[in-house]
Image 1 (tube, rainbow, N blue to C red):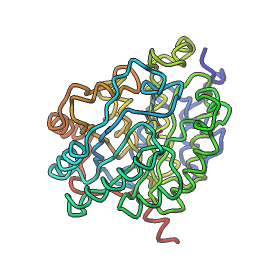
Image 2: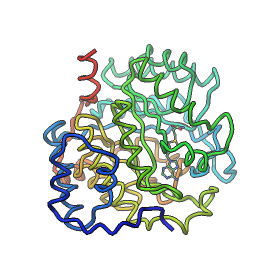
Image 3: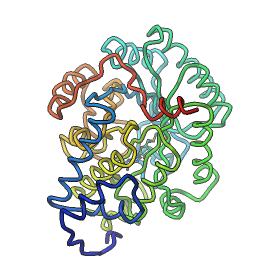
Image 4: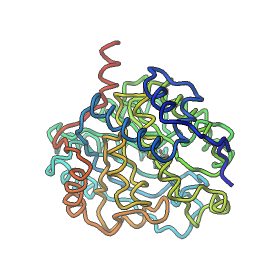
Length: 374
Ligand code: SAM
């Protein structure tokens, strides 16, 4: 059972056009937009693409994704690398493997890298990331922008990494409904909704370009939840969003609810609608076309770009380890080496009428504008 409102929306194109012309959107407008099908849905997608072209242009920026470790202290009910999944082969790249991947990104003019891993809040981890940031800046002569996505940390640690040179941070809130958050995480100190929210506030206060996101199509999630997620992004003044479909993993507790999920193709479609609506709502932010889109549709990320996304995170983790960072099933490109991955993306972005911003950071215009406003 999917928890969408069962309203039969027999709306005309006139309805959607008038909503799309508005300069602000209520919760109920957003709910409606997320439920359009057929021609109205196509109109929504086209509008998302048009708004993107008008406000951030047709450039797509790369963030070379280095999934450097799947060792995780957390036990999220949806995630394949959760601590309790004993069948995962745990890995931790060496510093020199991470630096090689960063060098690859620099030499291939990716502009930026993302360091992502399972969660670890030890001092050793904080020191290691701090050193890696310094070394990545050194090896690229300051050229590479650095995004971190290594979970919840203390404000002190976030500040230290910012001072070392990281300037963007991605921490998905996963869902902004605290009750749903409770259902998809263990109820303990390590999985606390308010703490995750506090982390986002700290990151913003420190001066990071702050990114968050949600999973789309979770069990127990409603369209009203998703509309609230969009309003949260707007009210928070988020600079970047990475959101994508929830994809079940057989070795996680949420797998028990797989029969209640929206069919996979509908989750994919809903994710595209979320991207298009978010682009219309927050015109100048950076929106990533999540890898999970491509796990469902071979052209998933390109479709995300067409309806409003402007960031792609090509996986540049050495091929040997890719299989072991399996958050969900059917993860794409796990058997490719980074060089193959790049060649493939050139062609893919051209297909989506995009142009790759080689060698550029592609910072969030929203961030730059809000700094100017002070
Ligand atoms: N540990 C860091 C954190 O918590 O932010 C980063 C790594 S975490 C594995 C990256 C993201 O993967 C999560 O924020 C979550 O949204 C996503 N993810 C995990 N399991 C997923 C699933 N089954 N389907 C879709 N996305 C999933």
